[in-house]
Length: 76
Image 1 (tube, rainbow, N blue to C red):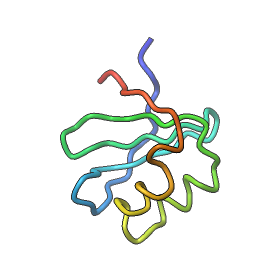
Image 2 (image 1 turned 60 degrees about the vertical axis):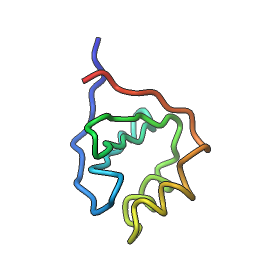
Image 3 (image 1 turned 135 degrees about the vertical axis):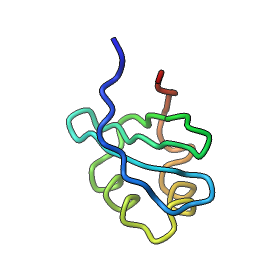
Image 4 (image 1 turned 120 degrees about the vertical axis):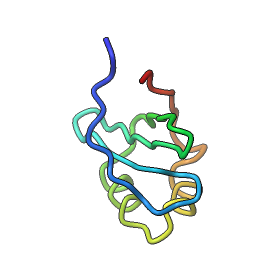
């Protein structure tokens, strides 16, 4: 069964296209400029919120998300 991806919000970034978060599953979704979507697991709501509010999504992703949470690519 395909994953239910929440609505993604566009962001201004050279690498990221849009982001979204599912509080029930604690999964943060990141859509890349190429169209692929990564799902980062067990991301606390406060981390997802801070990431989504950051003035530089790319820098925030690198410091808050990358290499800190397991992820998988979502079939689209």
